[in-house]
Each structure stands twice: as structure tokens, then as C-alpha cells.
Amino acid sequence: MRGRAAGARHRDRGLRVRPGRAPWILLLPAFAGAAFLVLPLAGLLVRAPWPDMARRVTEPEVLSALWLSLWTATAATVLSLLLGVPLAWLLARTEFPGRRIVRALVTVPLVVPPVVGGVALLFVLGRNGLLGQYLHAWFGIGIPFTPAAVVLAQTFVAMPFLVVGVEGALRAADRRYEEAAATLGAGRATVFARVTLPAVLPGVGAGAVLCWARALGEFGATVTFAGNFPGTTRTMPLAVYTAMQSDPEAALVLSLLLLGVSLAVLAALREKWAFVR
Amino acid sequence: MTGEAVLDARLCVRRGDFELDADLRVGSGQVLALLGPNGAGKSTALRALAGLEPLSGGHVRVDGRDETTTPVERRPIGVVFQDYLLFPHMSALDNVAFGPRCRGLSKAEARARAAELLDGMGLAEHARARPRQLSGGQAQRVALARALAARPRLLLLDEPMAALDAGTRVDVRAGLRRRLEEFDGATVLVTHDPLDAMVLADRIAVVEGGRIVQQGTPAKVARRPRTPYAARLVGLNLFRGTAEGTEVRLADGGRVRVHEAHRGTVLVAFPPRAVALHRERPQGSPRNVWRLRVDSVERFGDQVRVHLSGQPPLAADISPAALAELGLSPGEAVWASVKAAEADCYPA
Image 1 (cartoon, each protein chain N blue to C red):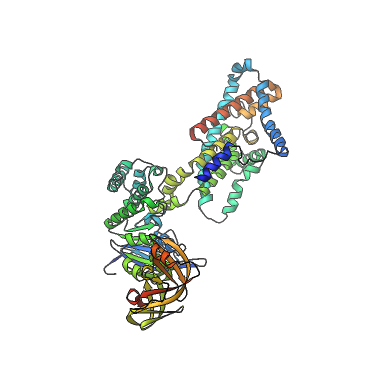
Image 2: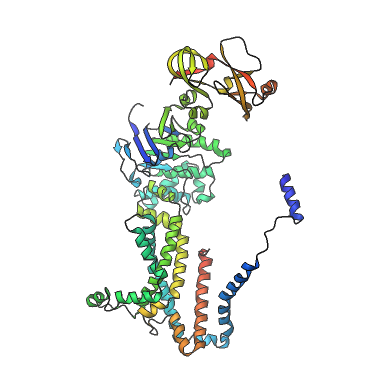
């Protein structure tokens, strides 16, 4: 008690130990870094043709690109969840020969330039590709230059984000709960569905958000594998790039729209699940 | 043990330098406590029984059926884990219904059984609560209900009292004892607290260094411990020595006179309160008298425990008034005496 009273007295007199002042050698680059990240976006806002805005964002080409972007990014995220969560489970919870190699290969798309990914997809799934030729010959399916190709390109680039995030969450989860479930008679599938998955749901959510954001912004792999056809494969990033060639102001409008939509979606998700820490 | 054992196991587990080798037999309705210090292998034994730890040898039989290689999820077991490990995203009811559901009951049947069990535990109004809303004692009862819900034949409890604060322990322990008495399968309980073992178990197995060093009823273990660890747990002075008639020559030096005559290697035990301390050498009735040195003095309940070094090294409990009268301080020499009738002697 006496110690606490003494502490209070010290606080009243302003005698509490203060951390040292932040040094300039760190502060200056920190401010410069923040400015570098914020200013270009602020520039978008300043230069935007605001009076014209409502009309320009409701043009049919813009709306179709936006709609295409939103649904393909969502489809790519769903596909990534369906394939990526089991993959993350396999990497985190099982031991098999070559597991480390598989893990390394799975994360390769994180470091490979997306355009290289696009080329690779084309040579595998293209009409003359390793698998594509059979798809075409046997089923008459041609993937390149369709919305499906957009989804595949986005999935290729974005899924590793989800896998890495979910695997981390699985490794961090307390495995004793899985043991408890097993002693209660739950097989591995039941343990996964009823104990493991609920425990790592925040991690899955965070991974899905990251994956969706990455898919929404995908450019290189998409333009290479799916092309740039208005209405079918011209997503927002491609529309921005195309507009930039002829009408920079239109590119500005599209950029702002993309920025606004992605921020709105992320904010809504954050509010709902508090995924982003 | 007489009759059919529900649990009959020999557990051999080797992990690095550590080796567990233990024989366990528990009858119907019986509770066996594995009592031992940290790292003795008691939790490993429990995990091996559950199938969570692979055996390097031995067997596990429950009701005569060999379960040695049965996967965890198909063993007739229920486990209460140390921190209870209630699933945080499920209500108490769904936690309890989890087991029956996994064993093939419909959702409605599983929930009905869970509700009935929770009701029996006095937790009907907490059925919809999440685990973090429950007190420690309530969480323990939910964990017990969850372990019993799938009607196991072997119930395993890992330090069931460790997560509770001291204030609630007495009540919770008594409640747990009552519920264990109602269970007709075999129960194995792991604890490092002798009080838990004494109150909850019918038999105690003292585990040290991966071996069972003593097994018997709580009363027997408490009265006649066989190792210094067990003696310390039950608060006795314990010595090993060689008896010739009523005199025992101690292995570490010194002699103790006992009441009954023995021959060969024996253990001698007496409680610290049987030791009297004197400034002058005491005279009179046949007793043991030693000249010892005061090591330390500490409070022990309403008594004072005096640790003495010499031959033999002892603990003595005296009243604070006696301490003041003797004016003892560490390093001083003192006379200690114990009546021969107070020293229990038994074969080692």
C-alpha cells in the first residue's frame, strides 16, 4: 500500500520515468516513408474530375469492368479457399516425404513475376498447352481468353497468400484441442471440421481478405493468360492501364473507383469479423 | 486385486533418455491415483493409455479387450485434461454432446443425453454458456460430463484440480469424489498433490523416474512411505537401515530404537510432531535421543517446523511457545528425542 501511495505521489509531481525523445535519424525517414505511401493516393483525390465523377463511373464499360473484377476476384478467393485450406492443412498437420519441397513450390508464385505465371499458365492450359490440348480435343474446352482464365490467373497469383496465412494459423493453433476431440471419438475429418477450422477461422478470414485484395489487383498474369477483351477479360486494373494509353483522366477515374471499392469492401469485412489485426 | 480388472496395462514408453515402464491394474468402480513429481512420467502414462503417446512395448486391455493399437477415437475412454480443453466456440451443452455425436447418436439424442448429464452435475442453467463464462469448478464438471457422455469404460483425469484456485478446491474435490464413486468403470487419475490422491483415490501408485515405486491404499502410503519423495509428500521423517531386534542402524549413519523387533533391511518412519526438542539431555523412558544442529525454522500451520541436520537429519514440529522457550536459532546444537513406540518400522 505504501509503495502505491508513493508511486501516486511521484506521478503527481511528474517524476515518472519517461522514454527518451525519438531520434531524428529515425523520425525523418519515417515521415518520408509515410508521405511516399500517402501522397500519390492523395494526388489521385486532388486531380480527380469530381463534377464529372458520377457520370463517368456509371458508363457501361466502367461498370462491366468493375463487375467483372468483383466477381472474378470473389470466384478466385472461393477457389483458393476450397483448394488452399486443405493444402495448408496437409502442410501443417501431416508428415510425408517431400513435404518441404511441396511447401517451397507452393509459395513460388509469391516471388515469381505475375507475367511469368501468365506465360506458364498459357503453356499448360493454352490450346496447345500440356493439358490444354487434351481439354480442347476431348471436351472442346478452351480456357485462355475467357473469364475462367481471369479467375485461374488470379487464383494462381493469390492462393499462396491464403495457404501461407492458413498454414501459419494452423501451426499456431493449440493442438491439444484436437487431441481432446479425438479422445471423444472424432475422426480426423470431424476434428478438422468441428474443432480445427473454427479455431483457425480468423486466420482463414485474414488470408481470404489478403487473397481477394491480391486477386482484385491482378494484372500481369491476367493480361498474359486471359488477354484484354472488353466485357469478358478486361478487369479494372486492365481497364486502368488501357485508359492510360489514350485518356489519362479516365484512368484516374477508374483508379479512384477501384481504390474506393476495395477500401469499402475491406472496411466492411474488418468491421464484421475484425480479421485484420 | 481380486476379480476382473477393467484396466490391465503394461506401459513401456521410451523417449530420449526417459523411459517409462509401469504395470497398471484397476478394477470396476476403482480409482487409481498416479502420484509423483513433475517429469516422473505420470502424464506420459495417461497419454499412453489414451493412445496419444505411442507405446514402445507392453499392452493396454480394457474389459479384457486388447486396445493396444486401437486408434484414439475408437478407444472406450473419456479424458479430463489438465486445463479441461473445453471447445471455446461451443456451448457447454454442445461440448458434452460432442462425444455422443461422434459415436453415432443423432443430434437430438446427443443433446438430450448431454442435457441430462449437465443436469446431474447441477449445471442445467449453464448449458448454453460458453466455456469462458464458467468458473473453474463449473468448467471441471462440464469437462467431466463431456468425458463421461460417450459412456467410457476407462476414465482418465490429468491433474483435474490444478486449474482451480485454492479457495474452491475443497468443495470441488469433494464433488469430484462423489461423481467418481458413481462411475462404474475404471478411473486413472494423475496428480502431484497428495491430498487429491488421498481424497479421490482407492489406491495410490507413487511414480518416480518412470517407475512405480510404491502402490497401496492411501492410508498405507501415508503411514508407510517407501521413498524420500513419498515421505516428504505425506510429511514423515523416513530412514532406511538394517534392523537387529529393536535397534535399526541407519544407512546414512545414526541409530533408531523401534518398538517391534525386526531383522534385515527396513524402513523407519515417524511424524515430525513425534519429535521433542530439549536444551538439556532428556532422561527417563526408553526413547531415542540425538544431538543435532538447527538448520532452519519455518512456520507450518499453527506449528513451527524445525529442520535439523546431523545423524539422522530430521524435521520436528513444535509449538511457537516451545520455540520461544528453547530460544533456538540456526546453527545451534539441540537435543532431539522420539519415543520408540512412535517410530514405525517395516520391511523395505
